[in-house]
Image (cartoon, rainbow, N blue to C red):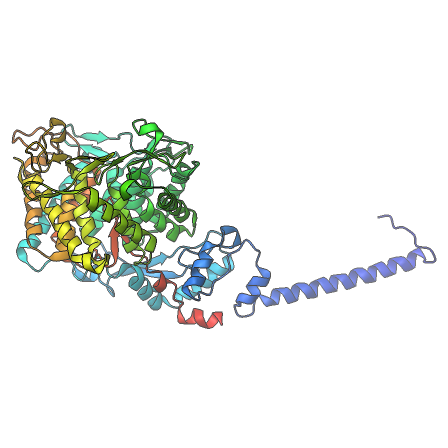
Length: 637
């Protein structure tokens, strides 16, 4: 090293001083390092973490008022986003069924019995290792508190005191029959179509289709919660293993945003909440991320088709002027809110709330929501309104969003009841024979047709009755019963006692399909769905009788040697099968029948909502989840 010589100072003297300085600096740096290191051996302190942790690491949040929590949720992720529940992740316990026990053993599914495994609430991806240790210690030191808190806030023993087994022997026998039907359908799918999307029972092979963009195993994902709820644990474990080893989300095909969301995302979310298996949560969040590019439009209204690999999206070729479909972009809210809950990423909730904002802003003809909307201009493309296909589940998700929010989502509530007023004023009709039905509206002209898909509305109006205006609550319950009765009539007026795809109320027709193209039945669940809800709401025994009529008809006309198949004409006893066991038959039709013949504490409606594919999602009791454990409150002072 070359030193610059200072005037008046000898070289030896300058070297000595430099050595002294070096020793002093070395001593000083060691002292500073020792002091800084000692700080991290002191008791945990939020204030110290704020000083020393980098800005990219999430800071613990002391939840104060509800408004404080909401303000925290609005902060960008760059500022350190904690979980959507407004607190850092706490390790909780959830019941895990033990397959070796008898199917209906009460201790398997009741609080206090069965094995327990770790169940982790959402945690921000930017959470530091220091905070992970803190939250883990907090959870392990308060397992009893945390488990009770989780059960109280979300699950509340979802499978009931005795797995929902009814005390009445006749009802119990009928429930067991539905369980046998599920096992039969599943066993044949597994034998002939394992890993494919659906079973073709006549030709005994699998069907892939083009709705899921290269994704496989639709029947497996759709069946996870049904198998678990019915106690078919060997079958459930086979399904779980397939998800773990064979569910490949890196597909590169054209997928329906709507179908992937309600079947795959909804099915994985439900399986996670029922079982606590992290596998399902991780897959749901990974798949949810792949759906986000569909929202990259001028308005934020997503397009209906997305390539899950490239992220490119477009509208259905048959949709008017490249429009998006009301029932498709309006049937994302439940799943996307739960994706935020599990990932801590607010983007999912922001995307669906943006849809709400646009719909509230634009003018609605006669207060009605047409089925086609341009994702470019944000305007309605044509004035076709239907509570059946193209529109149906948009309305369903409004009332269910309100219920799932623990009745705090006032925006969803207002939109739903305002829409109901417009529907009653313009679409609800009474036939000459006294049947109440939902007509379709085409630019002011009524089409006196009701689709099988619209028959879900009996249940929807029923679950929304209690929260309507006080003077309309009984009216809504009566309307729900009338519509459900009409849909039952569409079944009883056929030779097979199964309902057609659509039925009319003009030209002398009453709840009857008049066109050959409307006479088929593809194992749809909507009528049975309304039976289940109306049973839960009224306990009128006729709904269970109607459900049993459907079971007998399915057994007689749709059960074939290797599964269940839809039929082409419900008005003839000479049955022609369509060779398709739809995945929603396992997810919805059989699940709703099983719940219909079970006690109400099996997936209780006070704690769960069903997505439009019948996947149960827990009500988010945010005020409960934001409560701190006693030791957390002490630490935050």
